[in-house]
Image 1 (cartoon, rainbow, N blue to C red):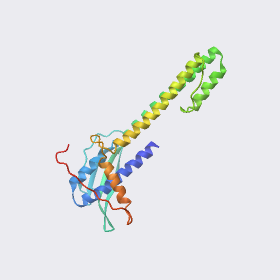
Image 2: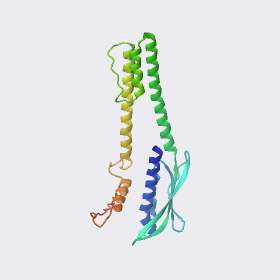
Image 3: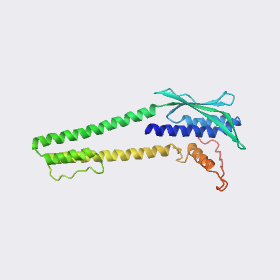
Image 4: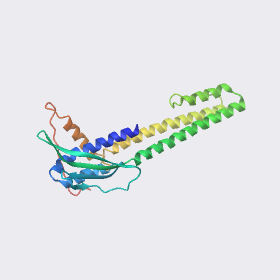
Length: 239
């Protein structure tokens, strides 16, 4: 699932980059092209970006990063539409790596193993206590809750302050930890999504967010759509 999401996101990013580069490369504004590909090259999956004109000459390239993991190259034609006529103005080549995806996979695997180890420890402790005290009912209750494995539905209630009660409290604490970890992961992903489209200094939407919104307005354009304009403000000396 994560691999399909990454593939779809990267394909969209490369296609969007090719569309945004079409006008400046046709007008030979190579400085603008270079600044645009820097945004693409900032993605952790991207190692290198190169743009070629219609004659096959290299006109802009990002600084290459050291390859990690398996690498592969994606090419997208740069097509400009003028008065309804589509013409190929060049191509963009992007070298990608699967290293971030592999790292995320191993992190998720280790977290899953840790949760499985905690669950296994709780089961073993419950079995040992039941064997010592010959209490089959409480043991069955704990085992059934662990098998269900849903943090929001598997909390146990045991009022006695004995060994079984200690296991129940440990199990409930583990379930609370799992629930809080899941919420923390959701919050972290939401924060990453926000940082991906906002400038960390000003907390304003960045160029990628602007390009996405602009492309959305362009693609949704229709004779009945509201008109819009782009206002460029240049701040000299702003770093």
